[in-house]
Length: 330
Image 1 (tube, rainbow, N blue to C red):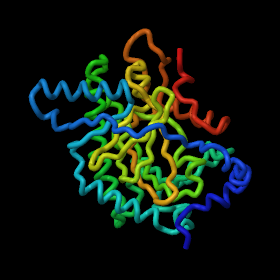
Image 2 (tube, one colour):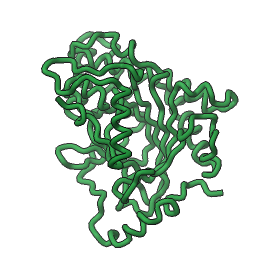
Image 3 (cartoon, rainbow, N blue to C red):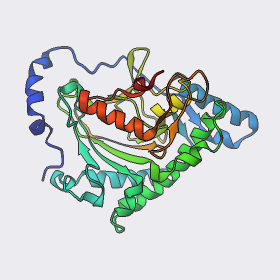
Image 4 (cartoon, rainbow, N blue to C red):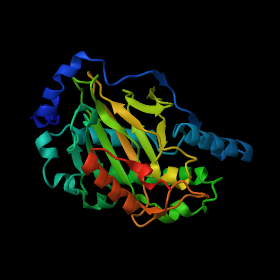
């Protein structure tokens, strides 16, 4: 039975309308490949000078790039490998099974693919994903190793995200326990992605350009590559670093930091020959949490996380895309 989603069948009109575009310049342009700033968290365990230097390195990367990589992060490689193994097992199941109503006993639409609001190749994502609200993992089959692996990973990822968020807040005047009070595993989510080989790889994206609607995202990825970020108007391709996790700043931290830290637009390009896997842990607050700029005058008005989510949903339905923080500018 077929494993891949039926992209060509569901989006037949889009592909037919785009047939003439194949002779034009590729939409997916890459200017250069880069290695993101690499932070060794082991330095946090050394003397005060090395510790402070490590924190400043993260803060500088979050401000200038919105992205950085970390090694010696405390999440065992064995656990990351096990998560990837279980992830591959899930996505290699027949497509018809993945689209069953109670797949893995998770909430409806946890498994999704493509983009239901797509109007052209430019806003169609060539990916399938399992987006799990971590408060729902208790519903999963206890005999399923995927559940125990996700719960083990989420616990460690949450502690890591809390630690990083606290370090980044050190010079912003944000109270030290802000993230511990407002964020937890149960308020966060995990999105596991699979990008099948794509025959239109020069014409479309694995995931369309976007920013993340959270405080921080922790990304574990394979070595295939495909992540790109936009800097100074140019798209840069991120070179994977073995055993490193990618950290990126989300919209909520940009608003909280009053624009000091940057939530950068990024995307994933499709690969014509090989599939790609990644897993993103989204460090989010409770819905009622109010996000308020840390200093005055503020760039953004105060808003709750739930208000932000609802505005995104409205914009996506109306325009096919997320508008984001610009909706909340003062």
